[in-house]
Image (cartoon, rainbow, N blue to C red; front, top):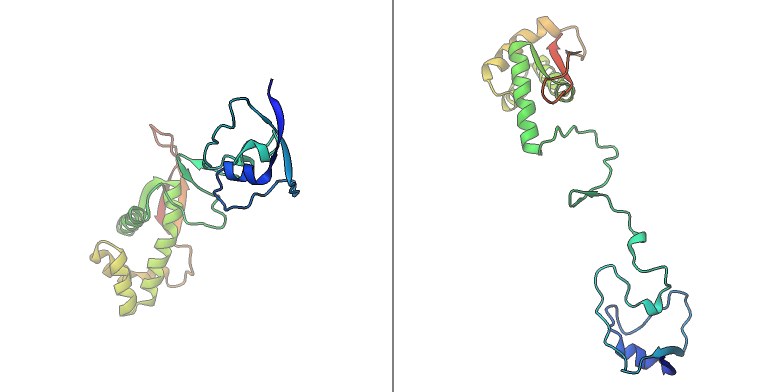
Length: 199
């Protein structure tokens, strides 16, 4: 049975490691000059150092509060901390930005070349914006717009043909140059597929 003795606060402060400074803060806001502790016969044992989110010592905390984990709300996505993408409407298409841009440039080139392609619904929905932009550049018809289209579309013959034929095909139309037609899912992974075509 351990005997009880009275220790003052300075001796406790000297025995404990202090990662935040020399002062010790009590959770209930009270600072007592003397604490009554149970002292084992073999003497006080050295305390472990402060590690991560673990509390400094259970002496100054209640028995229920054993860690600070309840104060944090963390979403763990495979070892990477992530948050919700509120208001970000960029379709990622499961690719990094450079590969995503290359994919959309290739799909834009193929759609302008053949007039109708089959792809996934997510890619088709993401492709509409770029097709509308290229046709809008062609309707302007200036040299600067032509160079912008040449910098995006892979084949320059398609750019010259687009700029030559856009007035008679889309001269009276203000936007909405593509149409998406849903089709059967893809075999293998059951991905939703669709045809996207020029109107």
